[in-house]
Image (cartoon, rainbow, N blue to C red; front, side, top):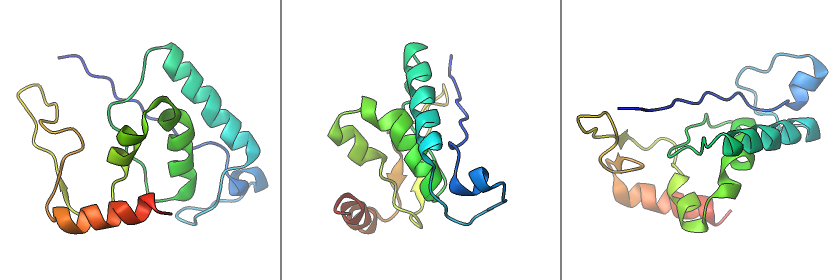
Length: 123
């Protein structure tokens, strides 16, 4: 089995630019951080590294980075499948190659997860 794990840090945030530590404080990307994400996305795309699944923290800077790097390469239905509602238990069943049997996993409470995903799409 061949698999690739890509670890990518978010682009420059406003706190990074100010030289301050934020931890879990939710601060946005700077214009430079957005450009860093675009550059990372182009480099990954040129290298043939288009992820099947993207996981981020709930912080805006990480989600924005993932959006810029990855989502502009996907069709709208694929983007909707990446909206993972927070606080919803998600189960991944893996095959003998450690690949998810169902891409995106299975929500333990699918009705609530679907309602939350719809709320995310309407924002």
